[in-house]
Length: 229
Image (cartoon, rainbow, N blue to C red):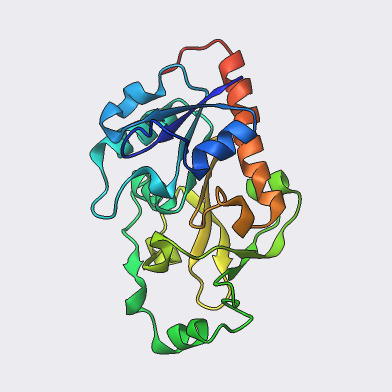
């Protein structure tokens, strides 16, 4: 059973949050680490998960960046969700996301009406996932999907002008071009999504394969026997 290091602001002594549960249901062992652990938080891990709940709003935490940087340097499989996707962009030198209230009023009006091209009555956004991406291969298809929209991504958004050059956009909102998914061009398996696939009841069932893929890749990584951290 591979160990997945999961970034969290503080250790939860009771039942794990949805991101930890997703790892456990995918067959992995969750090891919750605080940002202050830095690269030491990867000890014994075969993969890294940085969820939206891993840190609070505000400036990027230096410990979280150190943790992610160590994983990237070792080409460790990594999945980042919610604000984690923006941390990935920052790690590669991308610009900070913009507040949603800086967008054009026509975009805001379209989204607030629940238009089928943007947000439905359950508050789910419609996104387009590009064919040929690792994520599309993992979940078994590309195209249009409805995903959850609650969280930090409702207030901040990343566009192409802010994306780091070493990252590739793999998913985006159709109505305003906001990026919903990124992959590293330089690593074997590094995926970031702005939505929250750990909330399994709010996304397509096939998105659970992201966690299955992370655990599978972590198992392969651990089996190499190379102590790269």
